[in-house]
Image 1 (tube, one colour):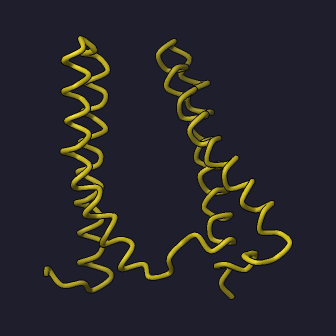
Image 2 (cartoon, helix red, strand yellow):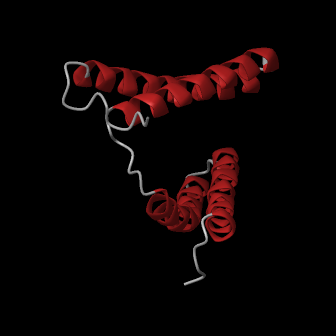
Length: 138
């Protein structure tokens, strides 16, 4: 049995939605705190916070499924995501350039790493679609 949308339209929908938002905010908070902890040399704290962020992301995914926020057409969603990730590389590099123009060189370098991640995500998703989901090269 799929959990997709089972709480949508029920007495649980609003509560599940609140949990979804809280867990999503928790992901951002824990990953952000992990970055700051790593900057301060608190690697053990950073590692723990990264694990917590992963848990929160998993929880948010559950609540998104329960309330039907996830499109079950996996191929269509991943095809769109692959294109968005690939395009995101260029857009995020533009943000890095703006940061560098303001003298934020260290931030620009970190943003460029994020841009490279986005490009890699696009490549990974394209390969996944091609290999496992039998999508043509079109």
